[in-house]
Length: 180
Image 1: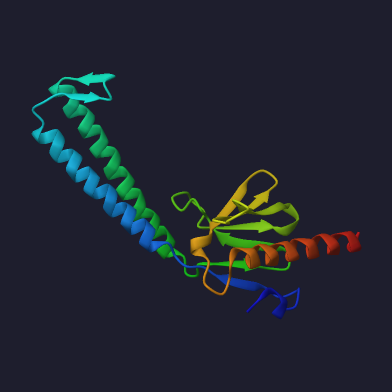
Image 2 (image 1 turned 90 degrees about the vertical axis):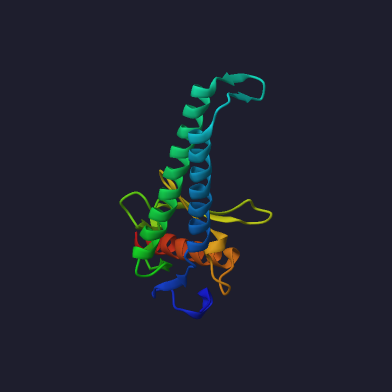
């Protein structure tokens, strides 16, 4: 349903696509990197020269490879954990209510899985970059929230979602002015 199809007082739900493919592929990539680097650290018998600037003896190269393997393993775990946190959300959507907007948090590893922003705190709704939007950014008084365009479903291009949010914000501002 498009924004113009509903009355201003109703809630408008915009379904989103869960980013499982990106998270699982990135977790798999970093898991492979961790395995390759751990193997390299275990079997290394030479030093390492990085760009002719840093020179490592065999022991230093082993440590360098091991640290990179650990970091890659941590990144892989973060990808799996983020996918699990997104899966824990019953509904993955944006809800435009008469007084607030609720959207999934872009920081799934922190406590909040969904963020609710009162419409009167929204200062701007932007498409970044403006020429070819990749991200919808909702700027609040002291922070911003973003929704990647790849999360939006086919029936909801970023321009329409931005327009629907701005229509709600303008309606809330007009109602606040009229009410006193």
